[in-house]
Length: 394
Image 1 (tube, rainbow, N blue to C red):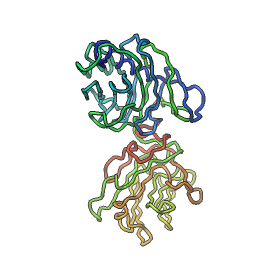
Image 2: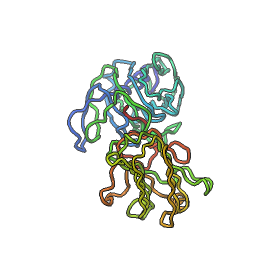
Image 3: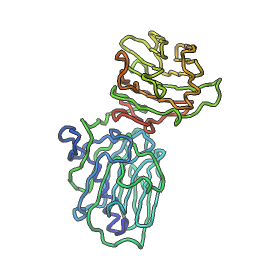
């Protein structure tokens, strides 16, 4: 079977796009649900794993069209848009973004092909994507402009396409080891107005609860709904260069629109987080807690806040003020950073927080940086499904 023979390529590449449909029917029960429709779908409601958000299969005899189009919007530079295969994964096709640019990868018999090109489309605007097939060539158009063409032909494939095609969204159904060019799977983006080969079929999903909406207007940032955290091991984050400079963690955002725990630091083995930074807009204050030390700054608003961590010392700087805390009771952040601490954004890590202080963050962090480098929440050890890594409602 040839994935990109005149018939095969037309079927596989175009039919893959049928998966980009969504209609919520019923409530999340933890069991497989069947969904049907052509409404908006938020790809970001899926955990950052390779497992698909939704998947389905269809007999190839039902395929009548060779062209599909949809509108796509994201600020995310990297992740899976959709996947499809035949022969139970022996021939497969992936459309993804890498560095904000469309990338198509195809596995067919003994051949792997990757094509990366076209304009950056992670600008938060709606873009019209069209994928079609002409013989041994797959074409991707962006906003009606021909951008990427992939040609592929193998003598080790069958000329007649038979059986079923599997489709998946927000993930893939083959091992990531099969990829020619590796990338991160999670995609914080939305799809709407899909025209999917005129097929209508149910999709399977195990997603719990109501689907996350696609907001009418968005802006760059990481959005916390007040339901969970994203955690990192500091050994996987940038390392400090000198003790004098220390470790900097910078947060940008409108503090008047934030409420809850912005971040916390915890050393493995400790029952509670060593360090906590909390914004309370009800009391109009910022509270910084380090073990037994508690500092409350009242009536401070900020658009940027920077913590500088050193040995037995922590400095906090905002637009309006600068504060320095130094004590033997403050941890040696420098040595513990290299040994491995758990840095959480949006709340505390422990299941039972003292004095009901684990108030999850609600609001948008426009930018998160560690030692001057942007932090991508899609690369977290754990990220709650409620968190949008790259977009905030505006």
